[in-house]
Length: 334
Image (tube, rainbow, N blue to C red; front, side, top):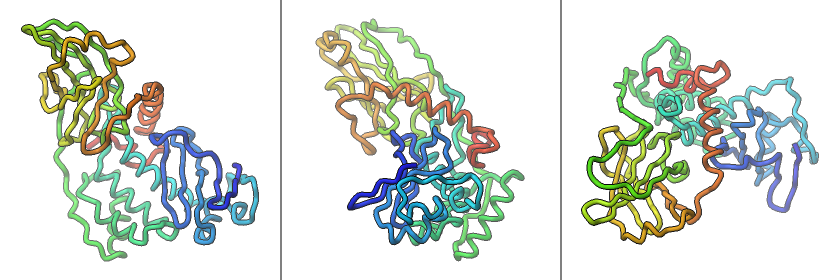
């Protein structure tokens, strides 16, 4: 890995190319990043305070970075327990933000309570290199009830011991109720009106909180003529997390997605002028977003579909994998 030194920072290795591929860890004096698709145990780094980071950098790269080297070669052999634990913390935070739950693509939702329990235990293993001095207490405070199961007994025991060490009282373990929801990838037909234009667009994951929409299902739109008027109708399949206000933008028109159709999809409709039929194909673009979370960009990402498919395939490969985190291995088993 190449090491570049500037007046303001030291850069180790190439930074992951996109946010949805980046597992981050904010450490003292530096930020570490793993590209989840690359599956490399050695992170890239952006070191803004080498003196503060020097106390722990050797546990991640050896001594090459602090010794002024321009190249870092990390041997596979050695005691890399701290680096591996740091990677788990970063990966669990990535999963919390980007996991593409999708019944359409066969990616089950994660158990959030189990994720937070596993994250708290992993955080306790790397406390000495974190920038947040209260990181462990915060992680423990976020843990809620999770399902009693022999497969998680070891994690539960470590969690209880960690909480006792930090004087944090955990929520009593209980079996949570599992919410059920019906999803379908296909569209329905209305009994009235004539559809004159229709299409489908990917949902930009950066514009909605994780788990709010089906990560692999397209958002569908139709321009419908009904009783002499023209309407834009939008539908998107929801994800496992409910309660977030969604909207869609098509050209200059915004549509609130505050209804639910018979297929369980989130839907909305808004009147539009007949001139919408004259829009060139390049402008017939639908953008779904959460108004309280993010604003849609002016130009949609043309590579979004390909990038999204790669993340979905990666998540699917993690479910049940012996090399994945416990949370990923047990996805969908609540």
